[in-house]
Length: 167
Length: 277
Image (cartoon, rainbow over all chains, first blue to last red; front, side):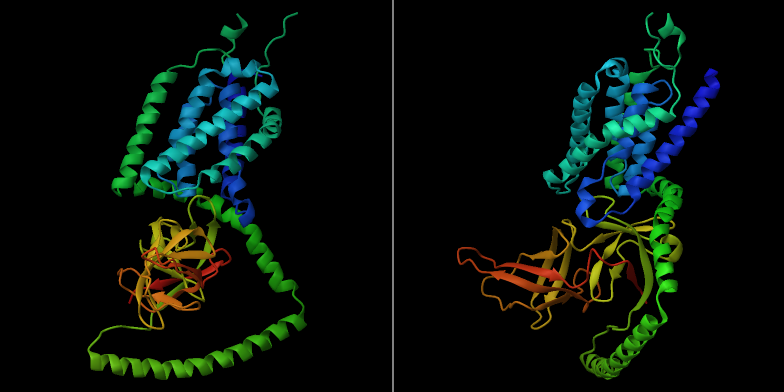
């Protein structure tokens, strides 16, 4: 498959996955599950920046962040900032992250989730919105649990040159 | 060599640090301006219009079930429901007759007192299109926007009482804050004796705080709190909550009072927007 064609395919897949992720973010859930909605877009962007970092990095993170800000009625720039910071780290260290064993990667993902929610919490705090710290654990834990599943699903649909094995 | 040839999995990402600085600075500029002034509403509006199709698509399943409900319900149930509604309607209109005479009496008395006020407010029905999008705040998105004449601060009611007020308006949708949001305060008075106070949300859908009731005030469990109209945003006389808990601690200056909202804040789908005259 040629490079351009591959890029186009990936762009289409990313668009479809982005729309699915945003839909899952908007979708109403029962009251009991409100505090357990995973951060779908964050997971998608982490995946993209690790595996296709040249094509999808900070620009996408910023734009998706702004869209999430509007969806959630947050301050413009809040999610954009948090996503930009996380995606910067994952893009910068994508080579290391790629060769991590699955369990180790999961541990790192937890750190990213904590950092992401800490940035959101911090901006809320600076703006004077009082929030309960325990509300932030729900999405962290559900996102962490579904990470391996979403990883498997996503890696099926994106096209990328697999690392050549030494013979 | 493989890594250098391969564009996608190569190690170098062009201008990554520069991009980080640009986007972080941009985020901070947005954050600061969004809180201080309002000229970012064009950006917010255009994003809101872009995601409107998604928001309505998410609504489709619940609209479909409503539609099927209406068509699949058996005739008997419909007849029964119709009868119930008719009898309810009769009861209501009998109450309304009294209300009309009371309203006239009220007008007359007000004329005597030289006070200008209007009980007869117009409302517009609206629908919630998304709830709970932000678990840390109690906000909802409704399907009426600037196009329909919605403005910031407009009051939202349901059939029973006050729900909240409009926070932001977009072109097609608007976002409302509920009275249970922990940043919301609402001036009220006790219907029985006119004692004025403030009701604060505390993040719970079934409990509101009433913090500033002095220890010697006349308040009882079951007292109805209605809007007092003093903040200038909510018109007076709409029911808000019923007092359901009072604890007195003589060492404190104020009673510990909480009240249960009359409107079902987390169950409604259809709301009413209060229209100005």
